[in-house]
Image (cartoon, rainbow, N blue to C red; front, side):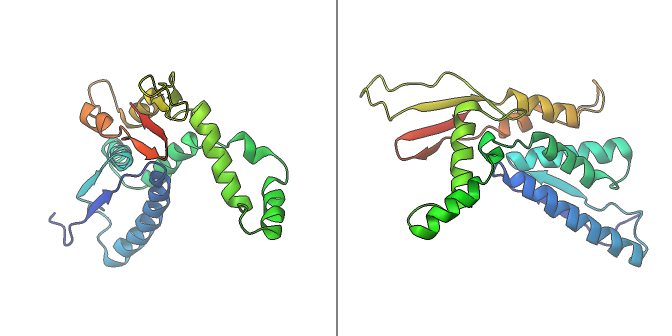
Length: 203
């Protein structure tokens, strides 16, 4: 049966934006499912093209693998959200009682001091840089500056094998039917992010 409408679903890159995309996809899918029922086109493919770049390629691979395996789009949004819930990690600073309230009180005294939410994000990021994020990346030995002997000029290196492993587990149907290709895995490598003297990159 020829589809009346052809749709393409393209996920952008951006690391943690992939979690936002999962929520956005769930809302879009629910809306399209309802629309298809009213139009009597629920037997047609919801999307004819699903693609993405970087973390978006992972989201796309998970959806395509689910639809190929189950022959339906129903439940695909739950599969994607489950993947991101599994990757999600709470930092230790977020478990400190009244942390944001403390910083908010300081912020009210002096607006130059960070708000509670800004402090939470900053401290969590610092922790993840030093310790890594379970199921996503683990730190390797930092590279010190041996040219200028600058202690602030440090290259922080991370291994994304945990993310690769979890992506393959969520996208592989059988040993003969793997919908994640090496090109997709390679495309999720995060490039160098430079801020002041510190550099962070994953390989």
